[in-house]
Image (cartoon, rainbow, N blue to C red; front, side):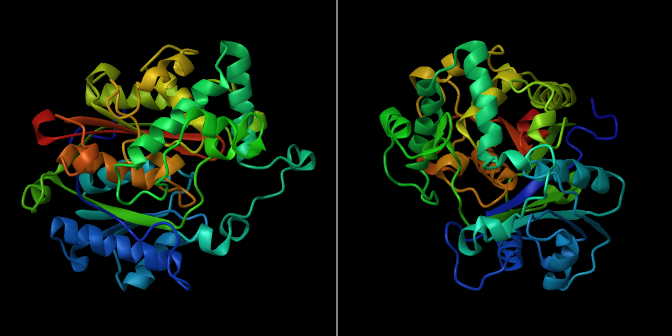
Length: 385
């Protein structure tokens, strides 16, 4: 449980993407953040001068909240730049909830932006020297996740074909998303025969490298109910920080999602059987398999068999990564904000061809570092409060 957080004490009222894919030359991460903020405010009908809480994290700027406030020309009552990689934004949801409940702010914005495709990953996210790993010249982060995949294959018999099914399902969802980067059908054979990256991965097992970002707006229930779209209350939250470097991960096949998911379910008063749509941080195909196991959708070691037969694809029994995920929709450096955007749109019924029928609950799971930081948010509709 999270005794400092109250179920439904804040709701997401506005969401938006910034420009995605390859953005205009000269755009900065703060251009993209501000773009997302403006669009999210328009989405819910609030004004910039009503924002009194700012939360953001960017691998290209360790002072992101300060710089964003400068860019927007605002002096908020509360600001937070907590940074744990791609899991930061789900943590920001909890921090914003706590701040709203404590009276530190009333309307909180969570923003992100990245120009990694335009300026190159080397400049967008420089890696620190690690005396225990750097001498072995790993290709990070791919090599770290490849180690987890190899261990899962060894321990549980997971196959390359099963991991490829994750990429194929993501692509099928992406083909129904007008904003998705990838628009070409993908087969298991295409995944297996693609360019090798880090054994056992090919390039199709790895997330995209795009620019992009966005923003979400949270507000108190009193404010949320006055706005133009149905609020999406936050029902549950959990987090776990298990390690920083892959060589210190306690178990390559068991992630902190076991703990963060249990906390989120307990706070929400729900179980995995109550979830209608699943949005996972799929930086690599093994992520989806690990998180489906660790969040309780299948037993440990069964993730590979679980995703076979189109179960997580459109028309399958469990809708997973309905926007196309980091594998086929977009992946701008850190992806955790954009799965929140998709979950909110699914709960509002705004997803057109890819809309999940009768969607009332969603689980959103963020991942940071090399399976290092895990954060889980459960969202619902007003009918679930």
